Length: 300
Image 1: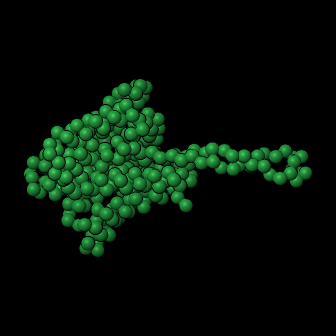
Image 2: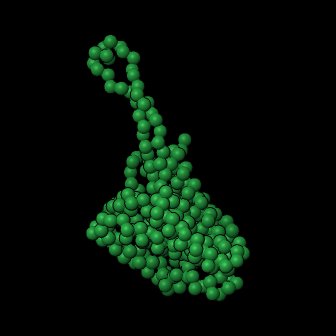
Image 3: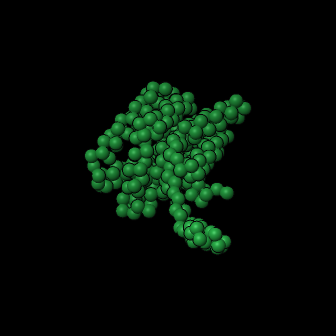
């Protein structure tokens, strides 16, 4: 039986994947009709170039280094919340903009700005909106990266990030430091779930009670368990799903989402059972890439 927190994380992951796929696929479709949507392409060297994947990895390495320096020398909250607000506003604006456009809403551009600013401001003052903000922001990031990269550069980006993830967790271990620091600040850079349950545990017995055959006594204890999943682990598989939608395959994006969700289940189960810290991106990326390869081999 799956733990409640595993189910919660999987549902949050799926919500971000489906929302992001809708946004990304709509963006791909609209770009074919309106060339001005190509301005949303963030690939520095073109969508078909592996150099774009390499440059994205360099940007992430630089960003991680700057973030580590900030965490080392700044112990406050305000700058982190400002950073969070900027990311949530930018990423969620993409989601609101494309969704309102698809729905045919009037003044969709202006309204998307208002909604994105409202979400960023609400999360700034209401920490309980962490999961909602993280889901919407992850959907926006995954959609725009998938729109910007063709499948092969997207795969190269995933592989490079997965190798970095392994090095950052098992090598330098700075990813663990970042996860704990950011998680402790309750920022929308991850989604989280926790469960609290009461369990019966045996009360220690004295040697005399054991000799006399005294019945075992039990007491109730409250146990709490929690799980966190980084927004990067959500956005990157989504990126490949959106990128695969550019090939015209209807099955590939959903196969990628299904495979990465299954891989995530086993990662979360292992983390919870073994109380270990694992990089989630490598198994999720491997599952997503294999799913795309199988679909392509089948000619679907």
